[in-house]
Amino acid sequence: MKNPFRSLRKILLVLFGIVGFGITGFMLIEDYNFRDALYMTMQTVSTVGFNEVQPFQSWGKEFTAILIVMSFGTFAFAVSQLTQIITSGNLNSYLKYKNVQKKMDRLSYHVIICGFGRNGKQAAQTLKAYNQPFVVIESHPEIIKEIKADSSLHYIEGDATDDTVLKRAGIEKAKALISSLHNDADNIFVVISARQLNPNLQITSRANEENTGKKLLAAGANTTVMPNKVGGGHMAHMIMKPSVVDFLDHLSVGGLSATNIEEIKVNQLPDSFDAKTIEHLQIRKMTGCTVVGLKSRSTPMVINPPVDAKLTIDSVIFVLGNSQQIEKLKQLFSVSAE
Figure (spheres, helix red, strand yellow):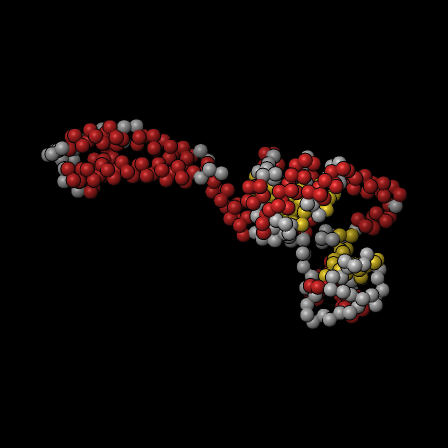
């Protein structure tokens, strides 16, 4: 955004230059004091007419003529431009822009949501439940109005396919990016740009067509989601296994329901835990949570693993519990929302 203060500085420089020239001239040529010289200068450059503070003794008339020619129209133009900058809203818009950018500069390890349509809004709602900082990138004017109505949302108004906009959103310091734009080509472009700007970024992208998923993965996305496919599959499951779907709908991974699933990464456990097996952690006894899954890089997911299942440094344990139990789990094992 263009900085209106640059134009403001130029205008003020012109105004002060003219006034300073007039004051200096009257003081040197007519031996006026500063107050009288300022008064004569302001009368002259403002073109309102004047009477001399004291009769000119030297080259005062000639200097006044020169000052009139120099300031003819310039002073009025500068004042009108100054008024326009203040009243046009550009100054206010720029100050808001700088305020948003300061908030962006303070963000780190945050999530960037590209597109605030239905999927983007759902992503934002879940991230809020995690207390995960995030910033939205949106270009549609109507959606921007909706975003502005929610003071809790950090947002950047612009095109997410533009590298400059991604940098303004702090992509170099971001934890992850969610691309939920309506156009598959735009999502691919965002993924390519994001991966180049931050090689360590966790990227999830929306795919509208089945053949787009592979392209997004090849472009640099870690995971892809097809909303239409997921929605259709969910409706079919509700027909075939309604009770199972009802049970699963009561589970959450982000505090959105009474029953939650949480993960424990063995390599992030406090030093006080020298666990060799699941039994050594005593998760059930100490928190009330139930271990429902175990996986590592070298082994596939094990559902309902035995208590004597061995843990490795890259193991991830999945547990199930209510909100109070999950809170105990987080406090005990220092589980974060990473």
